Length: 232
View 1 (cartoon, rainbow, N blue to C red):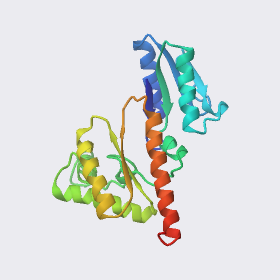
View 2 (view 1 turned 45 degrees about the vertical axis):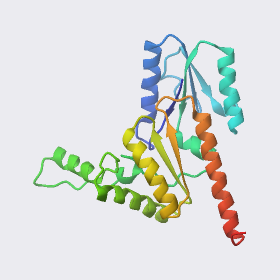
View 3 (view 1 turned 120 degrees about the vertical axis):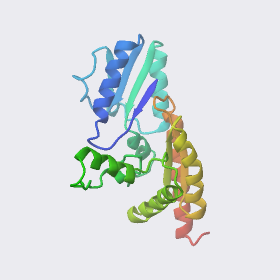
């Protein structure tokens, strides 16, 4: 199993990774592998987990990564878990640059200042803020849906994004509906290239995901070249 951990800087993804690894060691009988940059987790994870610094192997291509993981399994049939950190890095290693995110509680709107109502308890003020600003697609009012599409268009304009990657956590039905329609609206009504992908919470499909992103980046590069040549 390959588990992909994602989150903003300082959001606790490393802590979550360590917790997941140590829980897996307690509850599973197979061998565990953790692939990360450097060896900062050396003293945090169980000594029974094999820690691999990918910098030692120059994993610069999809083919190398797939071959590396296949080699791990070929050398040890008892491997049950392989942990890999950072969704953003996977995307950016494919040639893209993530300029802004718009997850349910990501940097937008997650970094907005919370204004406390002096007439309300602090906890209620915070709860009301998140209920009013959350971009989670479980809010299905027409104005909320239209607002999410408009926000994506506004963010693309503000951050000069050339494309949008709609990522759905597998089995999140709300994002399943949102992804299908929003990707169509963004591409065909707003004229912004987009691609929709599935991400499993615990996935061995990072290679397929990387391939989708690489293909999308290449299509953006081709479009940019055509624009520079006058559409020829």
